[in-house]
Length: 302
Image 1 (tube, helix red, strand yellow):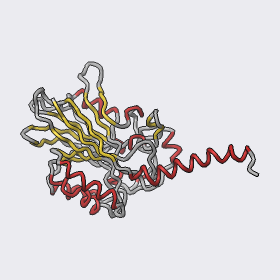
Image 2 (cartoon, helix red, strand yellow; image 1 turned 90 degrees about the horizontal axis):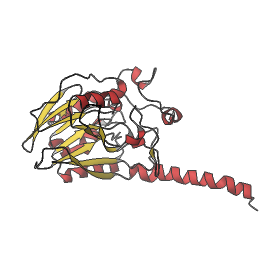
Image 3 (tube, one colour; image 1 turned 60 degrees about the vertical axis):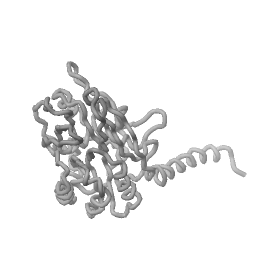
Image 4 (cartoon, helix red, strand yellow; image 1 turned 120 degrees about the horizontal axis):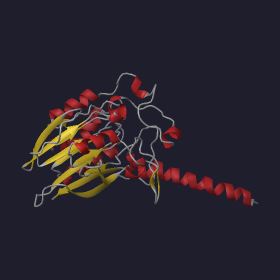
């Protein structure tokens, strides 16, 4: 005979086990394309379609993710913006290049994240959920970079993508002059911010970073960048339905850990900021809950 106390204990255990199975076996592979409209161009402008990719954390054996990424070329975007953390394995560079496929023939820009430089290591999930972020003393990035990031950089640049790691650049896309500023990963404190204002002659100025730290968003808002794209947060990765992210893994408010929002420093016009929830996870935490892996197609309009 099953006692009431045993049933009371079994119910939460069963619920937790079911949620974990859903998060690890289904949602982490439920790749989703988000579509967002951003009114950031001059009135009357022809729309631009921008595919925002982030946090693929790709491993060579992840064939389903690779095929899904390849399928995104059918969207025929005008521009690809890649905000880093492409790899999660020492031999992942060829898999990443294969997965992006025809997208590498589209005008594109990129920056790297910490996992493009350093192979994954186990981290205390409790510390993460309590809001630990930033460069940790003795952390993974205190060792020398061991990932094939230079191979990935060379492959991207050989196909025409611009490296924006602590750099400015520009592209002409559909007859529009786009000016860019980028930083190397702020989560590693590799970012080198300058005081150059956004190019006033460009049709649109865009800031690109891996991690959306406030020092970066504030600087680019002051400098007059109407659009900023970032990743890194995984959208919180483990979210509470109806509430959202518990953490952002940086100093950004968890309520803004994914999606499109406005950001401004007092006295300056607001910038549009899009934070991608990304496509992957660390191999040491291969779960997502109430936060599907995603890529985003942003339609920029007047």
